[in-house]
Length: 385
Ligand code: MG
Image (tube, rainbow, N blue to C red; front, side, top):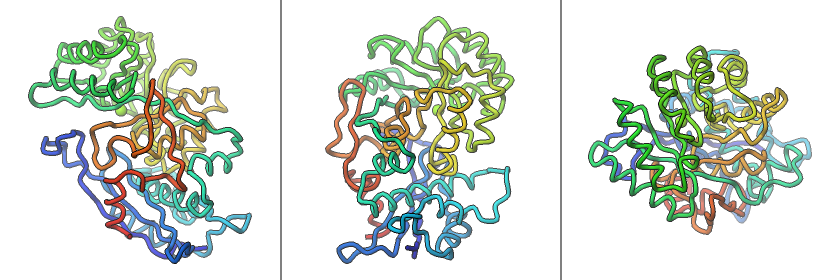
């Protein structure tokens, strides 16, 4: 059982439903991993992509990691019947030194997603079921708690557009939402929060994300201003490695803090746990299973931090796409993000999935189920069909 071909394509991806609004030139990588397993006359192909927010990884994938996957020997699992994602991961990481994660972790994670998709397809199971069996979880969740991510600042008519967006979230069945803050002025942030919260049951249903933009002084000012509002959580407050500022904020901000979206390894996860002032009973961990060297390494992060006292309910994987739903269900995590309108083609949910009262059911086809989403299927089939 081998991987015989890997195809990659980098595509633009926008933070806005209207892709003509400038979005910083953001891109992502799509990959198709072709196996030598033939079903109904066609090879089993795993699909993956580089999640959201870290640009395409075509160079690293094509020049370094895909050749190792293709060159390695058999990837059959110990049972002798399936593809072993852990063996594939070890093949990709051959010769890589510890530390210096850069963005190679995103390249590896992109391929890792496609390998898990292929492995679950070969096992003829939805990924959440396949993964749960793989890690010994006898009862994965049948539905996952979700919230709607979005609320990016619009260059024009920002507040009315924001209000409309949050209203549309609730129409879709979401009860909780997350918007972006760290506007040029704190007054503007507070207006955005008031506008968004007014469309939800109350402010405890709204999380805010500062996108790691606050300097130390502004982070503390924002923490003092947001403290009385009773928000769901306060996310990505300052530079992801500025643990000193982070821990100072944690001493003055009584609500939940969310961190870890821009940390990409188990070593960094341990650092944020030890030095960022996080409070295990109440704070939120956002590590992205794709950006953290893939699901294979993400499972190690979850195992490591739960051993150190974190509840599984603290993990809400970043990304906002269907892969996160499988991960949350199989690992019994707190929930997952969905981007209803932003980041096409990976926006919204596949046809057949239902959101109600803040929960979503799970795809029941083999693999991740990208094929259930018309736009996503079209993009992947351009790589391999
Ligand atoms: Mg964030």
